[in-house]
Image (cartoon, rainbow, N blue to C red):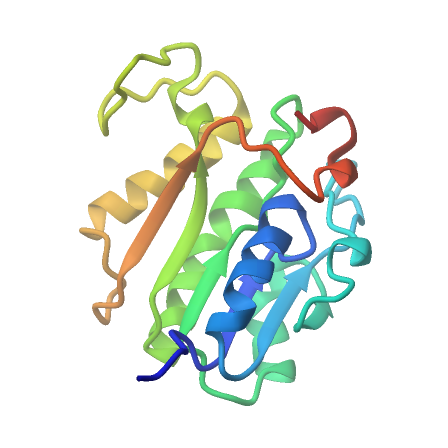
Length: 198
C-alpha cells in the first residue's frame, strides 16, 4: 500500500500560520518536494504579510520567496517537476486593510493564474477562503448564498468563491477546485501574525 497521497506539491503562504501547519501535516504524505511560495513577511503596498522562516524550521520543504501575483514566473523558473496538488493559503489576510486595490489584486486577481497553473499540471487546487465572506451575518448554519462581506478581505475571498461556483468547482480542464472557509483558526506558529493572532 502506497503511504503517499502526493508526488510534489505547492503550498503558497506555507511560511504563515495555517500554511506551515499544513506543511507539517502533509510532509509525511508527500513522496517528493513541497514547494513553499511566500513573501516571508514583506509587506505589499503597506499591506502586512505574516510568513516567517521560523515556522519552517524542521519541516521538509523548499522555500521560494516571492509575490503570488508572479506565480507563473516563479513556477516556470523554479519548479521543474510535476505537481500533484496546489494548496493556495497565501493572501493579505488583514481584515482591517484599507487598500482595496492591493487586496483585490493580490487575493483575487492572482487566483486566475493559479487555475491556469493547475491546468498546466493537471492538479487540483485547495484554497483558503474565509468566514469573513459572511460579514456580520454569522449564523448557526451558513450556506452559499448567505454571504455579506463587510471588509475588502472578506469580499476578495467571496469573489474567489463566486468564480469557483461559476466554474462548477472545476478548472477549465476539469481539475477540482476546493475552497475552505476558515473561521477563527488558532494554534502553533501563530505568533508571526502579531495583532491578528487569536
